[in-house]
Amino acid sequence: MAYVINDDCTACGTCIDECPVEAISEGDIYKIDPDECTDCGACADVCPVEAIHPE
Image (cartoon, rainbow, N blue to C red; front, side, top):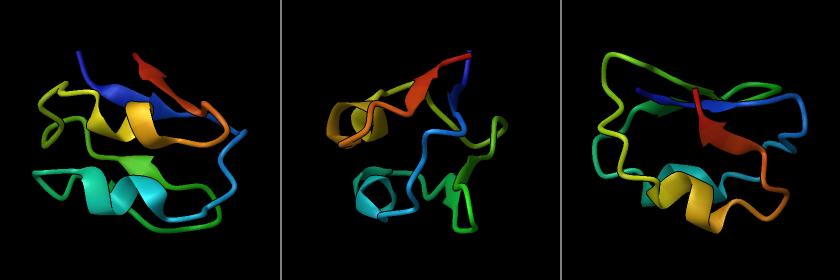
């Protein structure tokens, strides 16, 4: 089960540096590629607005 980023995302970029498989792409709201995500949770642990959750 991949992680997803909800509408609370502020596009701060903190999660991108934490993703070990580069599954997160930039945009107005960042997105996680479910085929690349390894469910490690590193991105969710650093998100300052808690916008990242397991799908």
